[in-house]
Every structure is written in C-alpha cells, then in structure tokens.
Length: 346
Image (tube, rainbow, N blue to C red; front, side):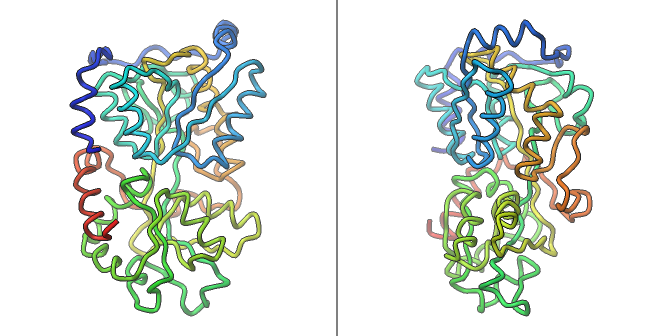
C-alpha cells in the first residue's frame, strides 16, 4: 500500500485530528501512575527494533513494575506503518507505545492526530530539543547507524571495502546482501540519504552485483554472521556490534562517503487501550535507567544526555554521518519504494 492511499482511508476516521500547539507540562513517574498502570495490567509495544533487544527491554520493564505484561509486536518499520493504518481503518485499537526506525512516520501520524502529547521530566531536562517534537507528541528513543560490514573470515584484508563506491567492484559480485526500503525504515532512511548524496545511479550499478535482497535491516547482520554472504551493504549497526561481542568475525566499516544515521522516535498513541501503562513504559524507556538498558545491551546511541555511549563503540560525534531529513523522506517514500523495486526487480 502507498502512503497516500493509506492516509486517504485513515483520514475518514474520528481520531481527533486537532492541531497540537504546545507541549504539555512535564510529568514524573508517580505512585498514582504506577498504580493505574498496574490496574490495566498490560501494554502493547509496537517496534521495529530487533527482538534480541526489544524482548529483553520488555522483560526489564515487567521486572521493574511487577504486574504489567508487555506484548511486543515487532516488524519492519514500513510494514508497521501499514499495519497501524489498517488497524485504524478497521477501528482496531491495539497500539499503546509505538517506536519506528522511520522518523517520517511520526510526521504523518502527528498530522493525522493519532499521537497523544506526553512529556516526561527526563525528556524535558535531558533530551536535546532537536531530538524531540516541540509539541510533545514524540521523542527520539535511540539512534543507530547503517554502515557497511563484512565477515573477515570470508574477505581478505586487501579486499576490504572502504566506501559505497568500492562495493561496485566486480570482485564483490554475488557476495553482497542488503535490506529493502519497502520493509525497513532503517533502509528507507539510508536509501534516501545515499541517493541524495551520491545519486540513484549508485543503486542502478549495485543492482548488477547479484545482491542478495532481504527485507529487514536486522537481516544483513545475521546473513554475514552465518557466512551466507561476505559483505553487508547496509543493516542496523547495533546487530553487527552484538555479533562481534558474541565472537563472530564481523568488521564494521564507516564508508568514506558518510554513514547513514537513523533516529528511532517513540510515541504514545492517542487511542491507546492502556493509556496509563503506555505512559509508564514510555517514561521508563526515556529515563536514565531505560536508556542505559538499551545502551548496555545493544550499544545503540542514547537520546538521554545522562547516559553515555557504550564503551568500545566509536562516539557518534567521531563518525562522518549523512544528514537525516524525515520531512523529505515523508514526501518521497512512495517514489523511493517504486524506484527501488524497478531497479532491483524485487
């Protein structure tokens, strides 16, 4: 489904599409909120984050606030977008907390009036203004990158790629794997950044390299760890790093042209069936404790300034990254998907 088609159907629904003009006052986690959340007893967490991180995060929340069960609904961000539109069109209200790796989604959802403004004290005091919506409807939960990576047992040192351009060398034909922007928000964002910086012609040339096409940005790391392909054109960097920590022969390359940077916003849906548990989970994830859990487990870069990046990971500021532009992605998403499908014939 195309975004314009989805929105035409969803716009017919009475979802309270009023314009939010200002963020509400910051709120703390209070005993009253915890009690109300425990009475609801459950919360749904829709996310594009890999289950190896999302499920332990949910278990940590359950352990912190006994009596609340978290249902993790994980899929690629672009499918997540479609699913939420389909649920809304069918008057199904399941989503409580929603996290996507395509920041453009939140522009659409905010415009449609689907998001509940909610600001915590941690967000107001410790999250930079450029990582949160000024009207308080969403905030960046975490940041990750989409670099090149390779299996060092399959790639000789002298054959190591150092740039996106290097991947066009015929010696890499049949050795590459990459994600799909029609499924993955990470890959949608990365595709937009790469096309803007070095041109769509790069993908036209890459398509001739007999690339193994997978769906999610979580899959290239798994394919090269398993030795099914030698080099990942893209993918979620935290999974490459987690594989290294398990002892896999994975090396990460920040390409010379710049590495795509991906923010991962989070929100509470206005139609959340468990609004108190939703706010509690949202608040805990954005707290220093919740942010530190994500960082310590996966090494993703935190939004909360109280939390430092994981030891052993390069500081985000030290990496040459490509500029993220969610507003432009929102405008171009359907075009990018169609063009990609024509180029790679997938």
